[in-house]
Length: 104
Image (cartoon, rainbow, N blue to C red; front, side, top):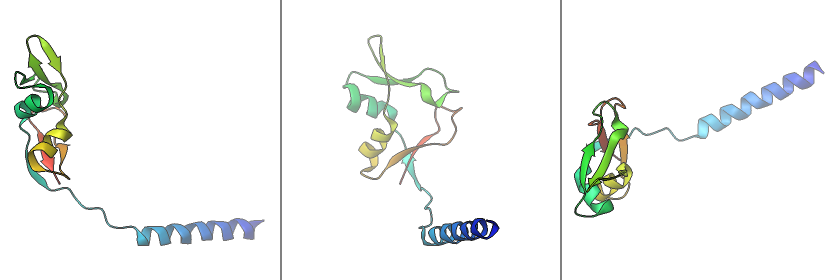
């Protein structure tokens, strides 16, 4: 019984090592610029909308506003609209509404 468990453990370690050795290294994202939230509001909801931040200490408090209506902002779409395909949003500090950036 002990030999069976040992062989199984060895096979598991060798198999995991082989998988780890063939995995591609992770690539770090490169910041390519800031997000024009006001522009995104206009693209996403219409030209009458403007961007407002409800709480500067909360990065998730951006809204698109018009005539008493508040709608969310798609930060990933904002990056794609500004910088093209492959761009995505990155939040540097959840406690700072102005810390959104675009990366690739």
